[in-house]
Length: 159
Image (cartoon, rainbow, N blue to C red; front, top):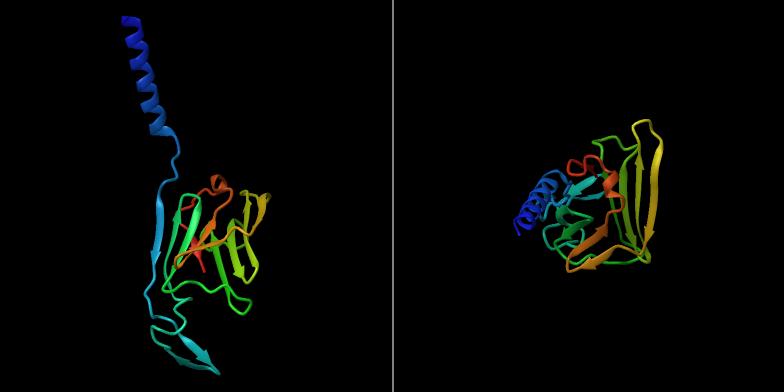
């Protein structure tokens, strides 16, 4: 009986030690954006259309949570052939040549494209996934692929 108790205690200690060193990607990266901050440009004339105009493109927040990106808008995004949503995230600062994710939604065109390269510029992965962006409430939800290959996931540069 005593040997069984020692094995249980050693097992519990090993589990605790493993939890301390295992990588957990549970951190949430969030950017909040002011609402009603849209600008309207027409023939080099700038104007503010106000809070009730094009609220479907006025971003409230961008959040990276585990294996997905959620972009929340003031109003529900419109899926149409005349309106598109493009999100690009560069995972290594402003180095836009490699290590990026692009999300595109326009009408029936809906995809997430991830490109990751190694330190010498060699391609590790170039993944296209189609029909994966969904609208939940007033948010676009986009899955992230190959996140284990992104070395600094919670310090992106975006546009």
